[in-house]
Length: 586
Picture 1 (spheres, rainbow, N blue to C red):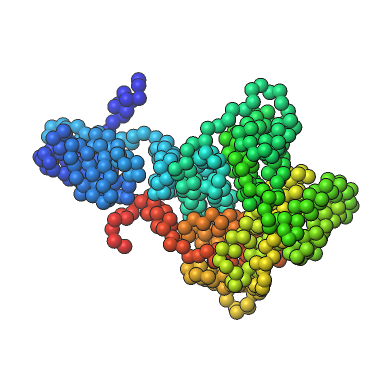
Picture 2: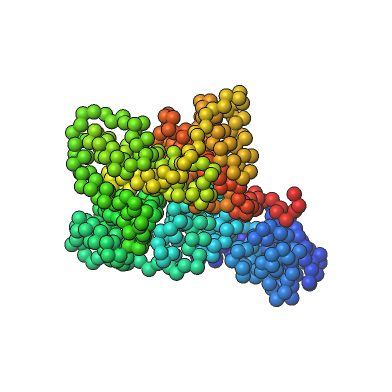
């Protein structure tokens, strides 16, 4: 029996109304089994549709019917009465019910139709393809309500972003991955909102861009990963995007492990100083984190999307600030010659390194040669690359914690870029601690050095004020503070006071996440909060952990409040999902 025959056999018709009560040209609503259904008697026949407009819930019985097209009177969405199909993709199809006449009565079939989950997935793809935020919101809320699992919408967004943006990995996919990383720290009711922001960022970042046509891997299986790694670095050196991309997909196809491929990618990302203003390595780290969530089966398209950034990114050895008045690149290149020996000596060391507190002030100092020598000395003394990277990331966060309001507003982002780059290096080194990648730690230290002027004068780290307010009471004050502009010092002091009271940091992380999500998307604020949460998780139990959260709270406060238009869109989607009447006055 075919599908149509099965559906016909399963139909359950119930009486809706008398034909006498619905003359030609008339309309009426009936409530059956919890459904409010609109009936229309047209010259072409009698039609029944859900009375709730699928766009924003307006009653369709108030609409206009002409030539079997029903037009909603709120936003003028148009529907085919035969099928319920929408002519406007932002509106979604309305459910149409089969109708038959029997003995002067109008009967309607209420049997469920189709696969609701499949429909939600299709609508999510529609919303991303057309960059329609409300459609994305309604879809992702329904999907998470159904399964509680964000991995499926995440994979959909990741797959779309890698195929429909010619320039490859960008801010949209980074935002999506940041949101996925933040999910465990958010309140349950904020998780769908986080995915909404991430998926909308992918849609917006891809909107208007041509698709990316993938390179096929090299035929056969002759080349080793070591050879492909050499070729990749050579092609990046001469800015050959296509050659680099083919190397990347070929490396994945060799069957190499994710760690081996990561080693190759991070080597190419650190062959040049602070490539792409730090975004190249940051995006590479985020691509591997995305694959941790989504699965290695997406590795070829995801990693191939990084090739353009590798080949075309700005190289700081070509910039004045890294060459004058002090040639930082020359200092670094000399230091790089010693990295392998320093690592080998550190491995032979029997001591456990505990010199972070002494090293951080050096990194924050004003002598790049001294900074580099101190970092090499730490490696020789047994400091693991991940611990060295962590010390640099912490130092970078202090640039934000000590950022004075006398600076220009745009300088927040200078300090921010150093912190998020240092965090990306730290996370990458925890994945792969190759000598090539260790160069990235030194690059990060130089960005912190170059930012030293941003802490003149240095804002003081806030101390707990001891005013007797409960920790919960302090935390409840934070959202109101962020409703006002330029409350950096007050917000930082509140966080210091909360943590100084020994309160659990998890509610604070959730509150910061909620504060971030209620604002309009700001790529840098999202990156900053996510990096701070990652650093806090590593530093937890130390005074440095509080400093990282103070820093990111100050950054968020500097960029709040926004217009919050995106929050309005999400709230509409949420209310529609609950079945509320959005069109009614509150």
